[in-house]
Amino acid sequence: MIRKKQSQLKKPKSSLVPEEPTSSHLAAENTQPQVYSVSGLTRDIRAIMEAAFDSVWIEGEISNFRTVASGHSYFVLKDDKAQIRCVLFKGYRAGIKFQPEDGDQVLMFGRITVYDARGEYQVITESLEPRGLGALQKAFEQLKAKLEKEGLFDDEAKKPLPTFPWKIGVVTSGTGAAVRDILNIIRRRNPKVSVLLRPAKVQGEGSAKDIAQGIRDLNSMKDVDVIIIGRGGGSLEDLWAFNEEEVARAIFASRIPIVSAVGHEIDFTIADFVADLRAPTPSAAAELTVPVLNEMLKDIRSLTGELIEALGQQVEAYRNLLNRLMDRRFFHQPKEIFGPHVQRLDDLHSRMVRSLEQGLVTHQQRLKDRKHRLIRASPKNKIQLLSEKLVGLQNRMAQNIQTQVRFRKERFEGILKNLNAVNPLAILERGYSICSKDEKSLKSSAEVKPGDKVKIRLSQGGLDCKVENVLESP
Image 1: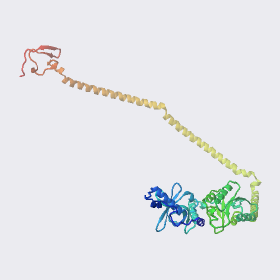
Image 2: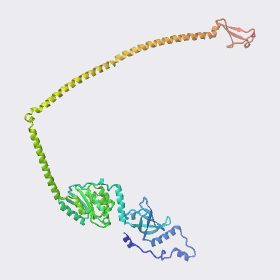
Image 3: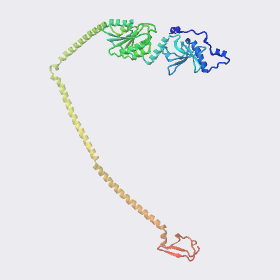
Image 4: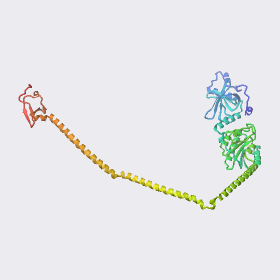
């Protein structure tokens, strides 16, 4: 990547001032000074900087790296004396093989421009290369950590390989040495096993997508027992297709067990960690997947002999058992076989009869108990009891009423005597009278004068009188 960009590197111009006359030259020639607007001056500065630094390599440390919702990333590249703002647009980010982080020492390629809104110069980043650790190696470590955290490497997710596969699917280059090695070993070990090759691009742009699609294509077939993916050895860049996340997730999603055979024994890829089995080479993958037919036949013959011998021994044991049983007496006198069963049947019959009799007695007793309870709970008896209670209540109520009447009569007579004692009319019967004027009782002779008319109420009747003389109280 660096070599490619170095071929595109342009040498900085000796002067930041273009050869054509600038505004400052024109201002010097004119009698009036040139006045810039803020945007106009910023625009001229941006044009000068973009022309002078349209492709530069910068080395420094990443700081304040952040990615916004649009997918663009912003960060600061700094050293111990200065810093510069940088932007990594979404379109360029897809070509970077690792995830930049704060503190990374990087070599950055891009172009310098000015951001008009803030009047700040910044670098439009086109590529990033880590210093000290290759971009591919760092991307490998980051993806490995991510997938391991998600559980794609867990042993519980590994599928067992079939013991006797009959159809092997292979995803690799159709013209590479890997497929030839796989075919040769499978034919040598078991020529009856069929191989279905799904040719795929295993290096360069689009290879990861082609490998993942090959895995999905073989999974769409019903008779494929196991899948081998891989290629021959090479550099980390050559093997990179098997380190892509798309391939790893296709392997994890496969319903068919997958054997990864990428590179040589010392080469490890992400596909090796996700696959159900890792083989050091494509040849080893074929050996691990397909058992040797002759050895299988030899084992089958050996097992068949052992099985026949075991069955013979078992048949002989059953024959001996049958002979011993045939010598027993009940085979010669079959009626004796039924003797114990008849006796057992009589015993069960007697027990059943006793059980039925005992059950009948129990049910009769229960019936008597329920009959007595029903009689006691009869409505007729309850009505009779209620009638007796009602008569008693009526007698008690009559007695209470008579007692109350007598008590109240005596009380009334006493109150009547008391009222008669204070009744003014009773006083009249003893010879007294009541004198009134204008319907008001007179209490003093001072309330009338001669000639007034008064009424006198007697015990029987009354008198209309006219006062002739008023006597004073003695």
